[in-house]
Image (cartoon, rainbow, N blue to C red; front, side, top):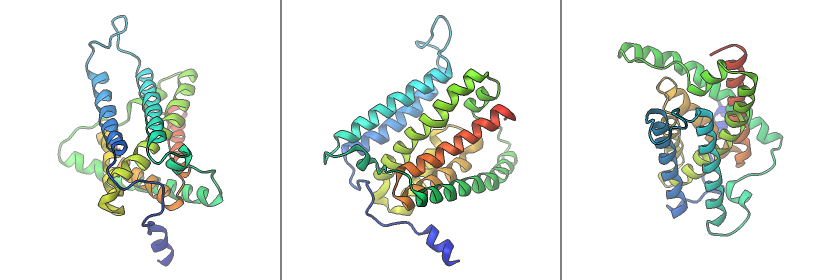
Length: 246
């Protein structure tokens, strides 16, 4: 019990986040909303985004959005006062053994939560007579794709997306929500992280996963540890989808 209490204890301060509502943090929240909006727009509106009568490929859209957002966030962080090393502002450091242990604990917690909450969530949706989509689009693309598509997804969804999302949600969004208090900021950030995926079936699971990755960052003080946990999680999901089927 003492070990569990110690594991769940979050640090009060001393990490590389800003607690005031600066223009940079406000911009990060706006960017998250714009990213979610663009995802919807590109999915349901065919004009003016048609290329030779067809919509751009979902992988191209997702890749372009990730690259643009990652570049914009890094530039924004670099120019935030005080001027200094970008790695320091992100809270990035080489991963040591302690960071690895924390990342693996967070990953185990994410899987435990997902496998526990999803059946209960399905029961609730079924009781409310709400239909749901079983799997996310990218996992379906991976399951029905070729080795070339699988390789592209490994880079895009397995590596690039975790890096982008950890900077956006665990670093920037948390900083924006931090004045609410640690627990409230973690909870609110987890809900926003889940909602941004626009995936009803995975909503509570994604919220718990987001909270687990935030805990990894808070506990380790190293955003690279959260990126590692997120990357492993996504790579396993892609491998299962491709080799076993979703």
